[in-house]
Length: 233
Image (cartoon, rainbow, N blue to C red; front, side, top):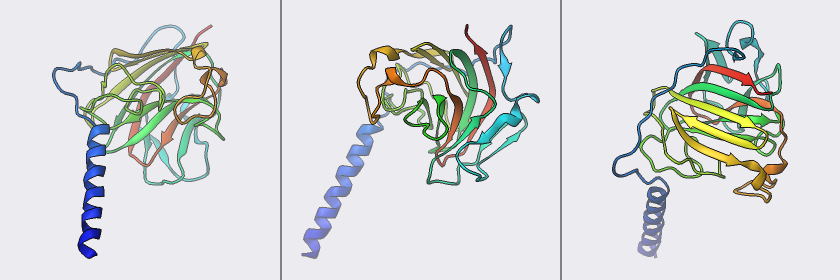
């Protein structure tokens, strides 16, 4: 009986490892390589981490000490889960905009950039561009740069852990464009998403067109810098 139990447990372990390898398949052959883009300049861009705006970043979930503002960066400690928590820009909501930000992650870190979100229900009343330490893996609907659990990026452009990445995001009405490290990886029309997709109960076309900009604390250490936004008329 003990031997049979051992063999069953071994089989379950082998299947689990195989499944993990399938879902985390390493990219093979030549793949594109990008670099973090420079912070934008010009008319209309607002630096949300400068002296005038940085104090508006808050833990919008509870009163826990989950991040610090230091040297012009947001440092999410990543040491308190569950539950998931969010660092949000509390001074103003945004609708149509261009957003540039840069981030770096530690090994196995997980975070996300939440757009047009609602602080008391960010996962289901807003949407997430995933931030994940997954350098070298094939892209999927949960990889870095994905519209989380909905749309797979065209390429996995993640730099190795500890190196800076950039997102350049444009949201206009229900059109979403995402570039990572200088490469376009998503171009989506949320208006076509008229039925629930992935794990989400609401159709994306029905999500609010304005909301809070938030950064997720998913238990991994992450830094964000050069967070600049430009409203679109």
